[in-house]
Image 1 (cartoon, rainbow, N blue to C red):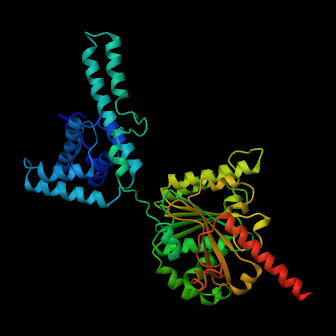
Image 2: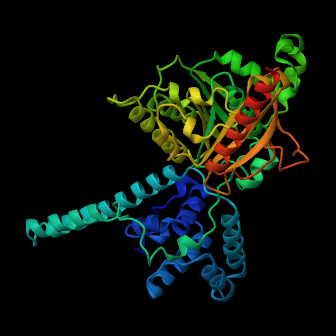
Length: 463
């Protein structure tokens, strides 16, 4: 990192907030720090406490050849600021405390603008130096001066450095999960579905996949998240009515009679909801990405993305096998969760074997079993004819990267008002399979065989 006179060139026009985010990124992001410190003049920073902060990082890196940890800087700021005024000491410590509890915003913008600014200043100085070299130096020497300036600050992130990034693997990873609205599910998933994660709801046709997705979206709205709901099967107004019912508890059949009451309730919701309708198989993940980019430019940052449902998306690349197309679609949805830094929920339909199953497992996923590989959380919803009549059903947690899976939970599901709740456990866990229990595939198979055998005996006795 360079320092010295800068002819009053600084980040001043970008403002204080920009400079604070830049310094936070230099501390948080070691590869970015490596890149920008090749071209950053500490005097580009207008604020003294930010210059002191960056200088301490540079001194530590120079002495120990490793990026400082939070603990190391805490010790430095408590013991090694005696040469600074009391005001600067206080500002440095307050700033350090703030960035430890506040995540940076507009990260890509700050990185791009700061690097562009610093590289241009370096190139300008190299060009001025080249003018002085014209009289006495060779072309190659002048060319080297310019080329060296162009190389500085370019992307030099070659991956995770096992030693240089030692502290990175010990930092707490903030998933910022969004609740599912079910305490039992949140308990085993460490709070719900986290950012950069893909969740999949599996259910046979008519079991309520879309309603489950609305329930999940409604919980995110209550938490103040911006929910972007893509529907490829239902009309956007139909989906909106389901949100009305889920958020207010009013029956779907009576929504139009309570227009004013619903409006008053919806106004209280802190989050915002955008429902985008696409005809079936007309939209791809690229279509969704383009729409999300437009929203982001309007200042709408997604807190949850819902795709109802993934199997109805158009593949970006046509393949011979449908299963390969579906696999790619789910991989691309997983990529969306990473790019927009929020959870993505979608649904998948079962094959015929799941139609009347009491517990739907991953084996019943239609077409592409491989789409299970990329999901972080998968749960199935099963409802027999008797369940639909009694407003009951079961949720089976088939995959859970953040906790245990193989759990079966009885649920109460009232499709008249999109009400989905976990039912209390039954009193007899031995004879009642609806309790939350861990089931292996063999246990599930034996359980169903026992039921079938029992039904056959009762049928023969009636005859």
